[in-house]
Image 1: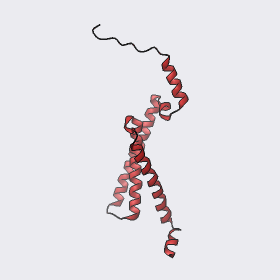
Image 2: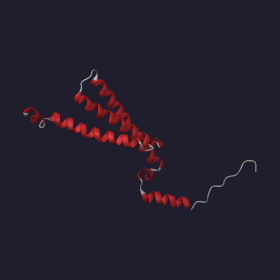
Image 3: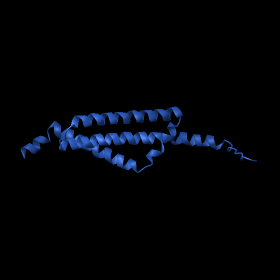
Image 4: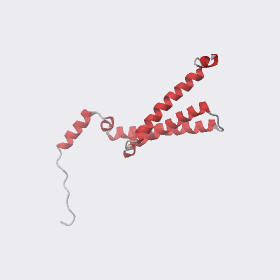
Length: 133
């Protein structure tokens, strides 16, 4: 019983608890986000890629607290690089949205979106000419 109580006071316990806490939350987010149309825009794809990479990293970290396997360091190095790619992909997607001036539609700012809709409502409808008339 003393060993169990001492475990609560070790850094290993708190490390395992923190990784598990992060893994459960990130896995739930990624699974739920997968049910939305994340593939429909560049920013959504970038966020999903990063979420999946981070989920994989923390889930493997939890598994690594329980089991040992060969090449564990190489696996983690690969996962950190995958996460790094996801972070840069997310950053570039956000930058693209900002430069295209569509950040209000992405962030859901209702005032800016409504103003943009009002501005487009005052435009005359586009005219289309039929070919051959």
